[in-house]
Picture 1 (cartoon, rainbow, N blue to C red):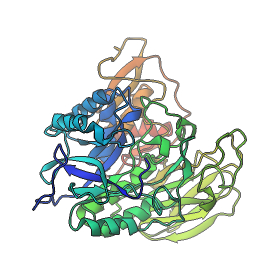
Picture 2: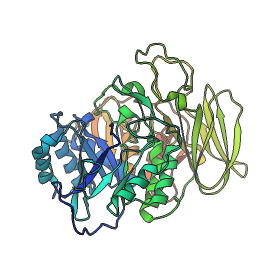
Picture 3: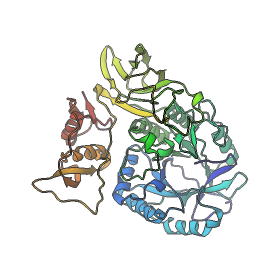
Picture 4: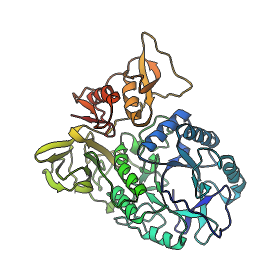
Length: 504
């Protein structure tokens, strides 16, 4: 989205823009939302919505802001599916009208949507009203709060400036609001490569910088930008086969961002608790980097390089989440290994980028705690420019915590069309609830789908197994024996989710 500096996204409580109130009883609870792009899910079934929502709930997200456009004929169907799914699992949603497409002439249609859903059991309520972001000019006072779109270092109007991110825009909005609720934006990245927008913002260590700012600022509300905007590369969701491809697969396919959810989970908990720093209960590591140096020349790209790339640094970023102090060693390509001491808690460091394989290791008292080598090398050749981040992770005892894909890219399932098992078929897709969801999605795809915690949603010919890694997977400390088989099977085939298993 592109917002002019004079444009705010207003939070309106109720199904129509209300006049200023003499007094509003403010909600004291803190909530975290995530921006969800409805425009790229025309084929979603209720089950697809549930999958996304359960992943979001697992890290503490309370609701999806349903960004939608009136030009999409499937908008009514997908809004209905989203509300149905949210009600089924106890999640919340609210409609976010994208005013790149909606306008003031659509007031009657907007009001009709709000009247339809304002009292729905899954509608997000705040301070006694249904939440609904709408567009407002800077001199408008007929709103109950404001959401800023300035989630990246900028002087306004999509201007790209050197980082790091500051709270200059947040402070200005909070002052102008004079006590009205402020919904602050949090985003991990922003790069895009369409003909209509071709730029990269200077995000780099933004994910932890911004969350640390939020713990100090303590705004009433936070919205993560975004859950699934692959086109702008700030998605934190897993891959989903029923997303429509708007051309972003050129830079998003094969670039997981799951590790960023691992970072956000303890920050969300700290924000809701009013803490000044996040708590860490397990040793984990998340890394990210671009696939090429900033000044690479790509041979087949007619668009040319994105604006802003000359402000980037050629570095590899590493966030350690440690229960106690340790040593971190990073070997980036042909560069000499670099070892630093790292304090407990969540700490982000960066290392000079080198061409080739990227390896990470954490040792404590001379004993390896976690680490491994990324599946993505850094190269200095390319056909098309890609300034998206490749995000990976490791958890304690060395297992990779980055799923290659939580849902098979070659199969599409729905709750209304499940094939039946036979003597010649095996499970080829499945799902689970809560913390089981990623494990069940992975294991069921390859024929192992324990019925006590997973539900098989499709049967067919055995899907070829990934190469065996020999990793020994075990449940995380505190998880029960229902994880034993799942962690063992998944770990042996290269999937070791850091929220459920440890692998060695």
